[in-house]
Image (cartoon, rainbow, N blue to C red; front, top):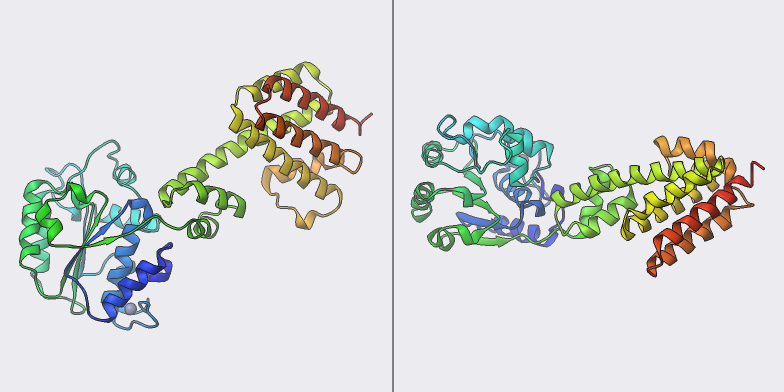
Length: 377
Ligand SMILES: [Zn+2]
């Protein structure tokens, strides 16, 4: 991973790059922050830059054998330690290295502890870093470096070391080996031995800036710019939260689509009794859901109008929404579009001012029905 592939954190990365450029590579570093903030990305970029044979313009080259092997998580001098399950049967991380590579690659190196256990079919488990793994690492480090001068160990969630493992690691940290780097990627430094804390240099990774999250949501997660912006605002600087919010938004968008199309069909066919039932259903959604639906409806009415007005090229619709709006577009035209928009805005205002939802939505459904039916009469 190059520095410019890390999401956000430009200031911190500049500082880390500078440390390597000027030869200030502390042998044990504690990278602290929530997994969702991209701590593992930071560690991977740091290690790739350190090991790269042809750094250029403050970035690893991406082409030398070191870069290629680190990108594939298969560099002979870069080792990974992470919590595992069932250590009596599978005593070291090597048993899980395939799943580890898969997870890191598929998630752009941002996933939390639960997602990791899910990936190794151990949901609801609590993993550990067993003492066998510490012995394994000591054995691996005792070989001469294969590729370049450095050997690196990335320990993801060192707080999952048991006491035996922690003591074994402490021995290495107390008497550091030459050109050997330990990066501990940690969420809860308070649960590490104080002796380990005192032997590491702490690097705090903060929350990711919302702009960087929104960019990531559009460029890598396929979100629309408006969905990306609103999810980034509420994600609290975390990519794992961002993904969850986007998934929930998709769910509510499809609920809103179902409500909207039903309202339009009932309006078109003037089925009053069912319109009352429709209003009841919206009443049960809670005020936030109601506002959300009305804003969604406003968007679709505007899009439909653009389709009637022949402005198909500026429409943002696709898939089922587009299909529906194309059919429905003739019913939203100059004679009623302003009145429809006014009804939605009025409902939004009334709900915002704590109006009685039953009155607001019964009125809204009947008024909409009248306006839509005008065309067919
Ligand atoms: Zn390189």
